[in-house]
Length: 451
Image (cartoon, rainbow, N blue to C red):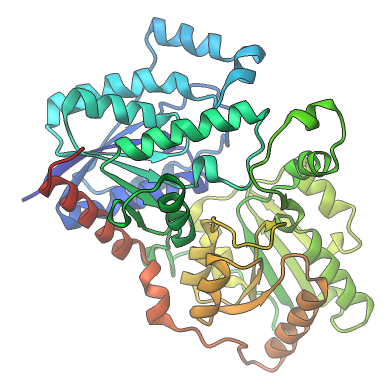
């Protein structure tokens, strides 16, 4: 028997970028496990100050059973959206500036509920204001509600709040949402444990379902192999160079506004940029360990002006190819052509583990190519280590990264690999398997009374 799930996903194709991958793949595979997705997505006509890239090719992955509809604003909702764009109101936003989407999402959700009679509701976030839409739909329909968090919301260590008041209000909003939901799905084990501890929730209410890779995505892209004696380093997706100066100013306490701002957790964000890898490349080239024409760094994905400036000012800028955004299929093709995949992550200054794992990490694992993970303790380091997928160094460990590059270069010249991956361990991150776990969560919430 097939049941229907009302699935709110602000980010969904034809919009491109990493944010749509989780929702798309769940929608693709849920019918195999007895659930038809009824997707409520943002219509995309609104200026939301997020990634604007489009990739309509991804819509081809949806099964015939999937139903996808996009919100449109009526006159009153459009006025609410326009008011929300004022700088004063933006300043007062506690959670995110997309609260205007709640009303159209609820309205379309109720229309789809009347038409298709869903058995449960899933809201994938961010934006986290979408939680309000899920809570309202649960109130009106009486259906069980599952929140799926692609990032840890108010526990996100990369967030900077305008004031402690904003941080407290956002934490209160998250607390309410966690308590109202019948299940909470976090995308890393560390973040699931943090949510259980922070909000005193029972273990069975909060589950971890990671992001993943789709085995069907591999083996179809155009192959672009590097020369036999050239070490190709590939990075896909985005960096955070444009945000580094905000963190530097905050940590240094520069300016009155930075004395008011609040960061729940201090981090070094430079380690989520190519800075330290570029320094490692410069070191091995200057020492003669790798000739300058025998190493290349290929950056696949949207780059900010700050990213480009960092690369262009580097002594090894001539070794870097900046391709910009490509289709997902093209991005996977570049992954498969790599000799090593660069995987950076920010570094908490308290020495503790990170709560997040970038979505690219799972595609890196799925590709089977060696990974250079420059990261602190936490799930990402554990995943790379446990699956024997690559070399791990500290996020700012230029010496360790340089040694890794020399080792990888010598291995390529000699025609051997430096890693022997544990494929069964990697396969627990495959999208079909992860979707089966989400289907099991939906089965569970429909079999017992909901809160």
